[in-house]
Image (cartoon, rainbow, N blue to C red; front, side, top):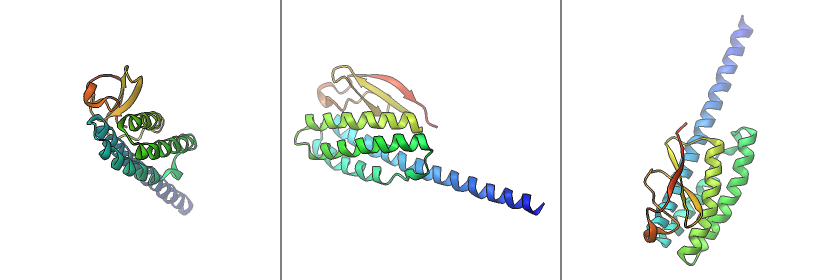
Length: 167
């Protein structure tokens, strides 16, 4: 009886630890998503200097993800996408004009879309939106289109192509 009780206590502790680790990971991923939205919103508002500053925060949030506790397949996906996000964030930060920044943001967006689809960490609904003129997609926290690829020139150009419900 004592052994059974001890095993139950060990299982309870292990489960709690896993849940806590997962929730810490989810919090970090949602902070990354918020940083991504900040870059998207800056580009949609034609604010290249703000985008340059916000992408530095995004890059730091990538580094802050406690990824070691992710299941194997998700860990592999994250490691691949994190590398792309970091490289494109560096490009965006170095971008001299908003057109170059927007091209870098496209790479960040595709990596973020793949990450959200595969890891499913979002605590709020996410809208995958697509601009046919830019032939590019992005994530939005709002259903209304806010086009980061053309900004004020075509602020509401695009469609919602997918809705990713919160987990």
